[in-house]
Image (cartoon, rainbow, N blue to C red):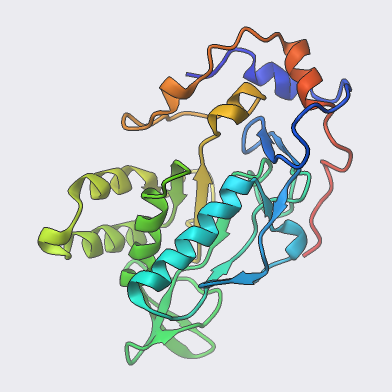
Length: 274
Ligand SMILES: [Zn+2]
């Protein structure tokens, strides 16, 4: 499952060698909860179908993570027409590492995004951060809203069918997961049942964190190249994922991998200012 040297790279990082990663190439190193990020790429603060709504200093990810969010937001607009922008929250700090308010988000492979909403009259709305109950209803500033299941499912679908990146998890509350799966199945013969089956695994309420009733948390797998450089996926690798085959048959030693990566960048333990 995981290359045996993956953990030791995380533990040994910091012993210091000249970086040898291609200039500007972003690399997720270690795990989401204990890793860091090299050459982080900042999300554009706005683009087709999205805008960053949190601290821009916490809007860094690998190029793959940033690409996934931008492509998915654009895909939702193409499919359903213009609507409220996808509100993008925290990704990682530029160098990754510990970030205030998150147990993970350390290695450029996690991103928080808000749910799409409709107002009480059913019109697309942009209420900002708010929690939705399992019925899909919620309130903010004295106004009632509903989860926009159509637009939110379109976002999930776009991420799970992305041509370049494999999504490991989309954390959400259990109630919202049910609403999204129901939305997908309501498309009748147009529903992609294999996609729905995968979504039933990937949409998940983690047992060790907040219920995720006010945002989706997306985590992606390492790329093949990143794995060779110390990126470490944690279980599970899904049955349909090609990740197992992608694991490199590398004979590199810890020292060789560290030499390729260089030392852990300074400031990795820096805390984001919110
Ligand atoms: Zn998150």
